[in-house]
Image 1 (tube, rainbow, N blue to C red):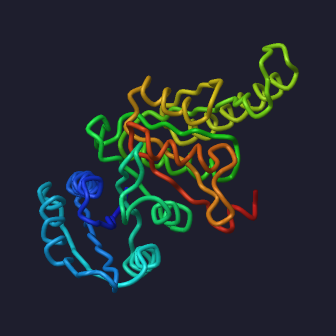
Image 2 (cartoon, helix red, strand yellow):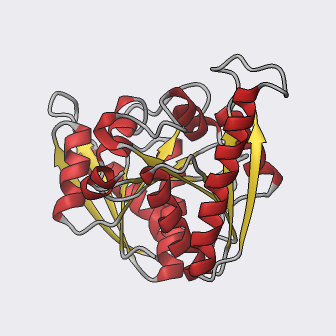
Length: 280
């Protein structure tokens, strides 16, 4: 699935949860974990001690660990390290409902999720979060955009590797349109589009010989994603992003942020390439 996994760390609980999870994946797949600590040039450098502790968290799973230190702005350093070292996935921890880790969340994680050319796996450090591997049940929310299609392709590849089931979810969000009547013609159009989207996704999955389930839900996008993920006991949520132009229109802005911060399931974000976006 992945060959080189990068875990940026600041020594916080969420970062350690990400390290442990990445270590479990790496040990199962026999791949390498790169642990990166970015040092602020204006702060005291405690990187050596922090990296030693981080090595223990990831190495406790028998994964191969490489630890590195860089000085500079975290976002830039993380992306440059990933590009220069053949990294094919970044794993980052989140603090959850009350905010973000001082290095790994907030603007840094949002910018890494937005700008990374490789998938970013975001996992909360809370005890309620299910961090299981190999994956058995994968959820892909979709709106039919090229970004959602790229996320589906990644999910199908993971499912083939792990022999997992993929659930395709389309959410009819009636709130922005102030639709409160089930007979409203606008709702019918939204429903028809949502069903077409999941049907197209199922057709793509069948070509990949992956077991799939489709559903259309109604309500707030982020709440329905979290609720459905809990209902099916999902091991992973896979979501597409737009990159610099913003987050996927289905999963836009605050909705994606809320999923990342509150989901009880790790979330893998996948960015569409420039060529993919041009074809949309």
